[in-house]
Image (cartoon, rainbow, N blue to C red; front, side, top):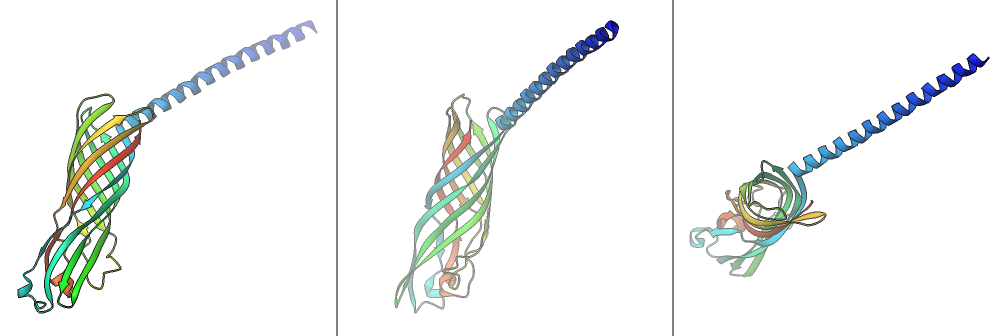
Length: 240
């Protein structure tokens, strides 16, 4: 009976010892896995930076009118002039760090921009507000200065603007073309804070395509060229 009791006690001892060792090893494994996962996440976000982008500024479309005297509307239209509107842009900013001073930036944004065109008719003046809403995919190379908390940078590259349809208010009079490739150039400053990094930048963009559509109306036939041109101040917010 004593031998049986001793055997049971010995078996219980080995079981408890083995279970304790397994628990310790499991805890170490899970702790190591958690540390490795955190390390991989830190490496990912140090290389790929994701942020929110907001920008606003004057929308200064470049317009060239036809010689009105050589058009069918010479008797009904005296002159054409234009006035700037406001450009608004917001979306997401993705940045892939190549090295300490070079990165590739991609954005996915919605851009609203436009122009006021004034038609001085014989019967009275009429102003057409032409506003465009576009889905934009800018791709830029970013060159940065060295620094820990504050860094200056410049960026340049093309943007691909896909119009989301004509302005419904004026579509019977004027429909601008919907696709453009603006070339972008800008300067900025980034500053790291405790929880976020804030970037403030100035950007100039110039479209390369003539957006004037040849509608069979006075409003389009009297215009020769219309090019997108915007200058905005932008902010980027991202986690530090």
